[in-house]
Amino acid sequence: MRNTISDDTKESIADGIAEYTGKTAGSLAGCAIGSAFAGPGGAAVGAIAGATIEHIFQKAGNGIKKRVLAPSEDKRVGTVYVQAKNIIEQKCAKGAHPRDDGFFDGGEEDRSAGEELLEGVLIAAQREYEEKKTIYLARLYANILFHPEISRPMANHLLKISEQLTYRQIVILGTLGSFVVAGQALPELKVLKQTAYTEVSGLENVAIAAEIYDMYRMSILGSSEAILDSAGINPSALVIVGYGANLYNLMELHNLEQNSELPTIQAQIIEFLIGHEAQREA
Image (tube, rainbow, N blue to C red):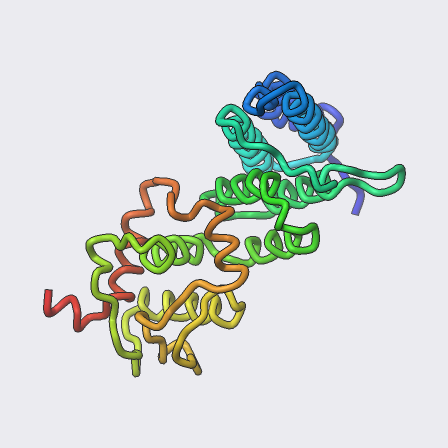
């Protein structure tokens, strides 16, 4: 079918994304990224890294402007672009040093891993209908740029997994992680249900159980007790494993972004994790 979008419409959409990308144009180049390192050597390395990352963002921004995006896509892509850049800038200001393992190096024919991943993140944002996930895509990209232990293939796989997760699964990971990883439980999480469910009732509980089981099958969550189906989960046996731990750290899930729906979603997750028995005893 022939594309019937007019040139004026295309230009209008391009101007929309330019409004987002323009807000931070050149900001990384001006970030005192090298000043946090002792001696002129550190400053030089920081300046080079800052300029390279800035180039990657400028190139990605120019690519975005050429795409025809719906208004909602325009908003999501622009939001992730700006948020990721802001996070990187904040890390630079605090003295963090971007990776120098070749992640930003590209050849004449091949793009750098940093450029490739940014494009993937922006495309993921374009396709992502759950807008509350955008901040976590931005955090994922920004933090990977400071973690040389995350290889190019691993980074791409983490992005693929993050696209598959629902917003509630991200909240599940963050809520469970506040107890399992940080060891600082929310007051409601002091006593997790100690035995496996034999059956799960209630629409929200059933949905949460299914999402936890899905994460278990994806090897994001593990369990010291085998889980055969979504009705057989023992909350106290759950652990964050493998790529789940990477996502917890890189998406900074110890600090879930506040919004109007988060308290309700988190309360439902907590209700499932402590079990009805614990609620009645409280």
